[in-house]
Image (cartoon, rainbow, N blue to C red):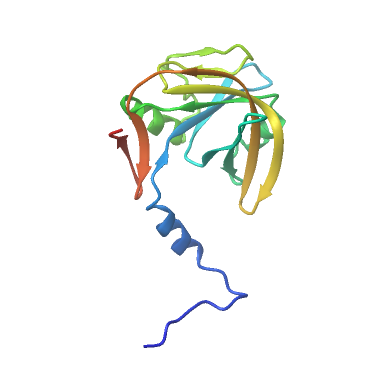
Length: 167
C-alpha cells in the first residue's frame, strides 16, 4: 500500500490542522485589558501557554482579523484569567460578538490596572514583553507582574466543545 504524503513545499490544509488540534485538550482563558478610554475589554482565548519561569513569561495569540487586535497591540498591559468550570457561560459570553461583555460580569481592576474576573481559577496581570507575527495570528508575550489563584475545576476546550476538566 502506498502512502500519500504531502510534498515538502505543500503544507497540510488549514482545516486538517484545525481538526487534529481539536484533539488537544486546552484550558480556557479570558484575556482582558483596559482601553485608552479606561473601559475594560476582553475575549475568550484558548491559545495560552507559559514560556519562561525566569523571567516569568506567558504567551497567547489573537487572530489578526479580530477587531480588538489594535487595542491589545497598543495596551500597556493585559490580564489572563484562567477560567473555572462553573464559568462556562462567561467563557461563551466573552467568545460571542457582544460588545458589552463585562455587563453582569463580576470583575475588578487589579494591582496593575487590568480587569480581573472574580472567581477565576487564576488571574495573571502582565506587562508587554514582546509581540510576534504568527501567520494569521499575532503572538503576545507578557511578563507576569501579579498572580491571584483559587482552587476548583478548570474550564476546558476539547474536540470543538467547551466543558470542564475533572481534575
